[in-house]
Image 1 (tube, rainbow, N blue to C red):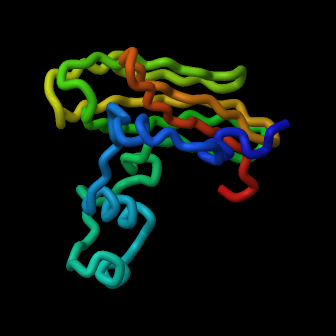
Image 2: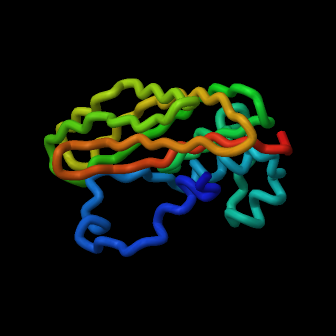
Length: 169
């Protein structure tokens, strides 16, 4: 049983040519992190210390940890339980101006991954498109891992998807 699973990726050699031209990026700006911190219960005083700005949390800025525009997807529940979580993500096209990416899902038994839409069609550089990933998992006492790859035939933009058993909820 590989305890590191998806968390072990990235320990190998980097391909500088591919890293410099990823095709798609998951952008996250200051307001994305403010929403994340608000969702974690940070106070205006704590936000000011971190951002050096006078942000306040409101219903519009109260985000959830799983909706931070990050290229990975993680969910957990107590051992022996099932869980379903919906993730919203936005990718920005920095590859070919006109390109179509298809979702390729790798899901082992116990992990259900759905992507909507399953095809992203870009018409220009810098264009942003949003998609939703719904992950369902039946977790025993360990971890299940899979992935989502956006593939346009040239670029393969890979995101790890991990569900694990946690003793703390």
